[in-house]
Image (cartoon, rainbow over all chains, first blue to last red; front, top):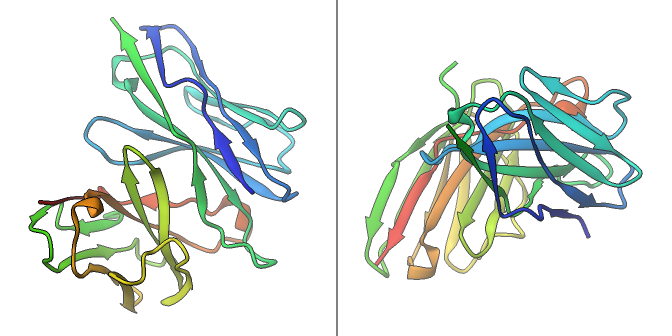
Length: 118
Length: 117
């Protein structure tokens, strides 16, 4: 069965420093997508970054980058130059690809709460 | 683009009452998902639609929950009768079938916070 594990319930980082949020996954499907979402205290779910299982390069989106290590089944989120507005809950999610009977639904980890200190 | 729209944003009701949550997906998206978020269970998929047809409702308690998508721009999630354990944040998300299925990102609405007393 598919599973996403985020082992860090809470993290602290100093403003302007970089921080890595861990995510490991388990799947037997050769084709899958990995996502990170941000949930601030206001509650909305904000898409941050995507990595496909066949992508050759690690994904980057502005200050966000995804450290994808396929053999280790890890997809860690790196936030560079942390800002106070980065304080939020961060969720890692995985999706089997559409087709071959896969549902395409997202499986979420339990989340990591990030606090950025001024 | 207005994004995914959900209503109401907050709902407080009493046990046994009927509750209807509404969702308008992003225009042009052909997939619609209903998720529920609780402290204990985290985020879990209840049901999803493709082109208005239910594709997977295995996560939805069918004795009291029902989901419909009468047209491409509107979906409802109904709970009847509601119970205190249904208290949660309910998210609607939508996505589209791209040329590369693996890049189909689900965009979430703001959620409906439901409290059943």
